[in-house]
Length: 305
Length: 208
View 1 (cartoon, rainbow over the protein chains, first blue to last red):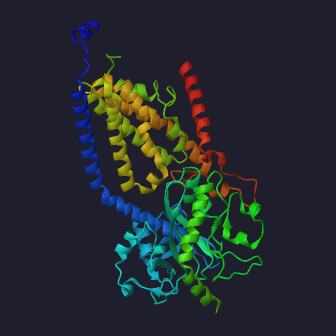
View 2: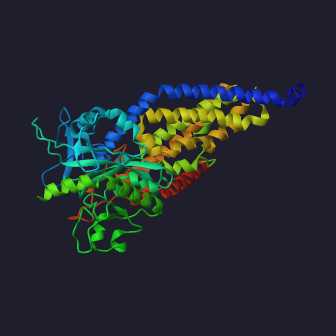
View 3: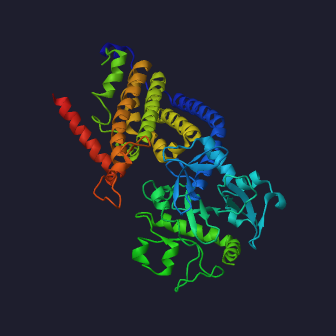
C-alpha cells in the first residue's frame, strides 16, 4: 500500500483541469435532463389533466380521495358507486376502484363547461367564439374569474336514460389564489340554489407538508359541505345582492370563535399552524366568488320562485 | 475490505451496516414518507435507484474527478438521478408523486446517498460501488417499509389502500366500545418511536 503511494504521488490537478471537468460534467447532466424533460412532457401533462378531472369530481362529491365513485342515494347521502359503462354510475362498494378510463368516462358525461358574463348570463364557447382548450390553458394561472367571460362547469345528473334532461345538479367553479408559499388552485362545487357548498378540493398547492398542505386532504375538505357562500346577516337572512361573499377560514375552531351566530354558516375551522394558508384560502374564495356573484344571484332567484 | 467478494458489499449494507439502524442516517424522510406502505415502497425504490446509480457513476469517474471538487461532482451526479426519478413519478405515478411532494427532491440531501458516494464509491471499483449503493438503498427500504406497514395497519386499518381490519370491528355510535384507528400512528412523530424501537431490537439481536 505505502509503496503504491510512493510510486504515484498524488498531485493536485491544475485549475484549468478542474474547470474543464466541471464544465463537461455539467453539460452532460444538462443534456441528459433536457432530453428526459422533453420526452416526459406529454405523459406529465396527461397525468395532470387526469388529476384535475379527479379533483373536480372530488369537489362535486362524485369521487373520493380513496379512489371510488359516489352517487347520491336519494336521501341526501353519498354512497359508493361504480362505472357501469359510458360514465353512468350505479351502486357499488368501496372496493370498486376507478381506473383512469372510468374517471375520464364519468368526467366526460357529468361535466359541461360553459361561460358566464358579468351580468350572470350563460353563454357557450361556440357562441362566444372562444377556443375552449386555448381559453382553459391560457387563463389558468391568472384566474378565470378575472376574464369578462368566466369559466364554470355544470354538474349533470347521473340519469340512466339518455334524455335531453339537462337540469344541472350543481356547478363547479375553478378557484385560485395565493397560499403561504405559492399559488393554490382548486375547485368549489355549489348546489343549484347558488349558495350551498357541495364540496371543495385543491389540486395544485405547495403549502407546508403536514400543516398548510392539509388543504389538499380529505378531513379538512369535509368541513365544507353545507356551508353557505353568502354570509347570513345577524338575524340569519341571506341577501345575495349585498351579503359578503366567500367562506372564511377562521383561526381556531368556528364553534369557539363564532359560536352559533349565523355567520358561522359561512366559516370553517382553521388548521393549527397554518393560519396564513387559511387566510390565503379565505381570500381566494372571496375574490373568485365575487366575480361570479351575478350568476349566483340569478340561479338563487330561480330556485326561490 | 479490499478482498471482499462483490456480493458481500450488497449484503453488508442490508443488515450489518444498515444505514438507518446502525448509522442513523436518512431519518428525516423515514418519518415523513412512512404513513402509507405504498408511499414507503416508492420512496425506498427511488432511494435505491439513486444510491445505486450515483455510486456507480461516482466510482467510474473517481480517477478523473479532481479532489477539490469531488463533493460538487457527486452532488451533480446525485441530482441528475433524483430529477430523473421525480420526472418519472410525475409522469406515471402522479398521485404518489403528490403525496411524496418535496421528499423526492430531498433525496438529494439524504445523508445515505452522499455518505455512500463519499465513503465508499469514490474508493472502490464500479461494480462493488454499485452493489454497495443498491444495498444501502435496500436496507433503507427495508426499514421504512416495516415502519410504513405498522403505521398503515394501525393508523388507517388498511394495507396498500385496501381494508385489512374488517369494517365490522370498528366502533360505531351504536357500539362505541369496539376498535378504533390509532390516530397517533398517522402523525410523523410516531416514526421516531418505531425507528427507535427498531434500533433497540436490532441491538438486542446483534448482541447475541
